[in-house]
Image 1 (cartoon, rainbow, N blue to C red):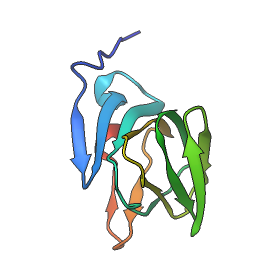
Image 2: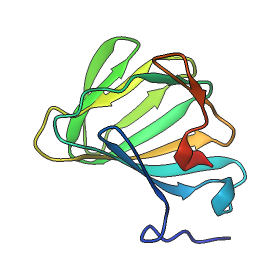
Image 3: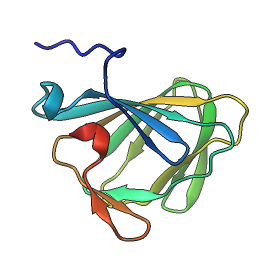
Length: 124
């Protein structure tokens, strides 16, 4: 069973959000992708949808999860379950970073607000 060091995991930045790729096929996982997400203070939600369910757990800070147009305040210890095909975004109106751990099945694809379809870079 591989151990992925957070210190050497690949980092991807999209807008004001940083993704640290932990588990993914390129790092030894065959069924589940996991990454750490850090949303910068003052960030607006970057809405997208996924073709598979995603689960996120807030590990530090506070923010706003926008699901299907409805905003939900979130804070450390909260879990966010994002159903497949649901528009979703994370915002951070606070002064401290919002940090989460996300899990998504291998092979999931994201549809961005402009209609572009991608495989999330941390999931490869």
